[in-house]
Image 1 (cartoon, rainbow, N blue to C red):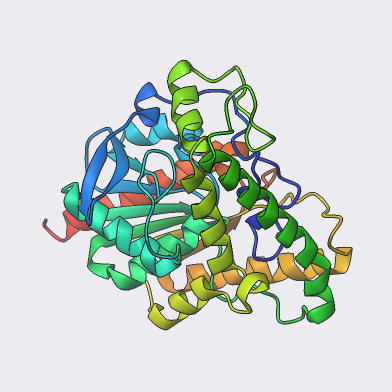
Image 2: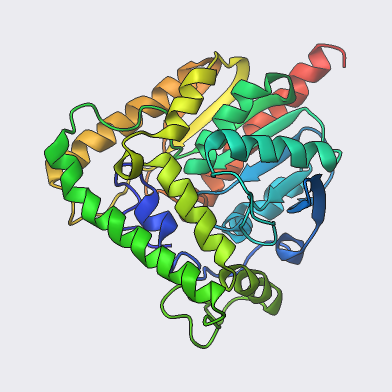
Length: 346
């Protein structure tokens, strides 16, 4: 996953929408993670969800824009050793069928709710969301609060992440990059739809490193050879970026639904290492990072048991750079949920 642009406003777009987002990391985790378990959610659509381990609460992982299940490999085994951990593909990603709705936060969380219901996965849930998946986890909690017992948000997107101090000049500096990425991703979708993408000739749309196992390569290849993956990422980017439509639809949907998190244990992890972006001035980057950290503190403060933690030596993908920090955060929430459930006599 290219890290250079992870920190650009609206995000997450450059790094996570980039057509080379499938560059392999060293394999880790159990082979079940790249398996297929399709669940009928109605309307002629099926979604993929893989659950590993046993116990309560159930952890549900949601990855960032343009990513895939395998980004959780470094945390999967330790987490699934203590409780049931579920990993799913959003609509159009991985093995999941595409949606006929725009990929806004509202439609994504509706899909997840339908998937969990159809799969018979009930609360209590602990949601773990990275990047845009963090905003989805937040909105899911807003909409279905009785199901969610705790949250771990990993360098999450959030409503209001656009710095108020950024004016038209600042946004104009990064708009060409955003448009270039959309154009490139649309070209990949067109190539996939025409059957012109292959593992040997990816046209720069993806890379599959040889350190991947055959099962992992099969999971990634079938996803990146389909147009739906690119189209879903484009729809997510356009819903999330005011550069595309003049409004951040995801942020507006979350703002409308926002409610206090009560006394749920909420841990928000923030990265600390963001390489310079040639499209941003140092002042722009500092303004964005200050707003980013403040937004994460505000997310944590929505719970009386919230924590906001800046993780040293980690960029945007904390689960890859400092996986133990993510594992520890999840264990903290799981143990707290169990303790509180026991104390309440359930």
